Length: 168
Image (cartoon, rainbow, N blue to C red; front, side, top):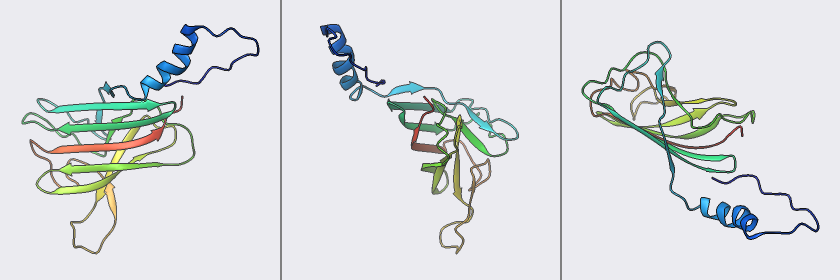
């Protein structure tokens, strides 16, 4: 993982260990494998329970820039809770005064394309999907819930991909 570069001082003796830490290690971190993490899936009213479903998260952090993916596949024993869904981020978002937008997909009976929203200082992200099916002249979007944009069933997948600035 990259970190803030060292401030060098005039006359400082540079060792091989310092050069490795400040140059080699930072450069190598940009080509490292993504780091897995376990996101938490919640509902604003009642939390869902993954049961025999599967959820994986992973991220790559460059300084304070975070690239992140969350993939959720529901199982036959998954319960869907109620209310607006959200997922925990690997790092708290910066207070940049802006909302971050990423990509979301729901693969259920139909394939739905949506957006991820991360607010300033947030520790979670939320997915929004069209309120109406394609072909209806309405461009509104709503939080992903247990019934929007369609009622969930075993085998449904939610795929979230986004980039944001971490608080630190």
